[in-house]
Amino acid sequence: MLTWCHGTVGTLHDMTPRRPIVRAAFAALTALTLTAAAACSSSDEGSTSNGGDSTPSATVLTTSSSVSASSPSTDTESLIESSSTAPATTSPATDQSDLDPSLVADVQAVLDEALGTLPSPDATVQAAVVMADSEVADSEVVWAATAGPDREIDRPFRMASVGKTFTAATVLRLVELGAIGLDDPIGALLTPETATVLESDGYDLMAITVARLLQHTSGLYDYAFGDGSPFLADALADRSRVWTRREQIELAVSVGEPLYAPGKGFTYSDTGYVLLGEIIEVETGQPYARAMRELLDFDRLDITHVWLESGEMAPTDLLPMSRSFFGPDEVSDLDFSLDAFGGGGLAGTTSDVARFFTALLGGEVFADPATLESMLAVPNTNIAREEFGVLLGDGAHGLFRMDLSGQTCWAHRGFLGTIALACPEAGVSLVVTTNTALTDPLPIAADLLGLVLAG
Image (tube, rainbow, N blue to C red; front, top):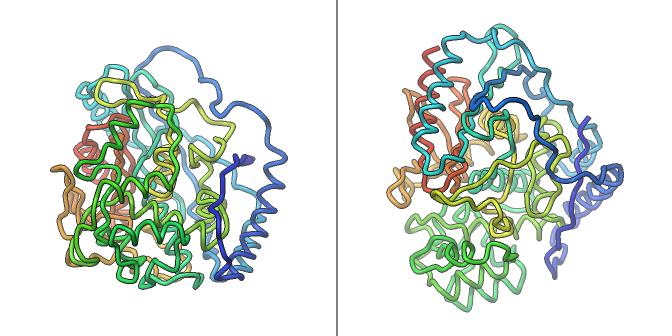
């Protein structure tokens, strides 16, 4: 059984309890979490490597039962009850012969070929595929593979902006619980300090709604990659710098201006998701990562290997983190507080991230099917969006729609050469990471999806 250990995360100041029932529920969850944390060992965040030979590629297959038929909670009382259940154990490995050997070889060949295109010889390509098991009802096949120096299967990786999908799903769970509404103006949902900073730059917080933050239609300048932002250069120049949410919001205000009236355009904005992270904390009275874990009910979904790198301790049974690269240069020593407030910052294994996308698009995360419908709604401003010439797709709420191999898939990219996607009609989800910024993982994912569907 896996026990989670939570590090200390500073909470926001002035969190006036606007919704006492929700806050009371999370107070109870905190007590349960602290009880579990007391039992955690004091081992290092990264466990030792498996060792073995220097073979540059490997594949592993597991099978697991589908998510429990029980639905997510629809009220705070049942949310507390669900949090007291023990975390599920990991699925047992099964014989790789469950899959066609030629398919296994073809998929491995895609990864091996992609490895040769990466800008650093030390980079590693990882992938995981989740498929409905046609032989066993209510089961799925979880298949992971890798190519490169870090050959171990399912090393954790930094998913960067793929974490925005987790943030969006957490916000929509708060909508289900009645804590907030998609059409709520954000001014009253933020801390007074943040609201004052944004209003000082001319932002109309009555016109910016929760939905517009989720959709990237708020008109907020992007502190991370907006024109003229020094953020990336500053982060690379001082890799040990510890960032705060307030610094990133103030950077957005000091460098940029409102881009357009809310709802009148699309601009991918990390700033908007940092604000969503603050809203989660204000409305629950808990740190972002803990609130996300409980609202999405990782235990019920059997998501055991996803955590916030800057703010939580890693599960104790994991391999060391995959190395990260910016072009040919390794940047694994970056302090990932730079991405820890709702716009990214999560780490995990490819298998667990793929399984989360399967659960999300399969209707297992939300109690009400209408919530998933809301998440997948695409406003007219968000059709066929790109960023820096890279296809994002049709922007919904924390997900982008794209057509691949004749399937409608829902995806999100991450800065470090990562993409996670789910094609619900085909019953396939997959994750690809190259751990390398400036590398497009979509062609790799498209090739893998085509092979899996054909096989």
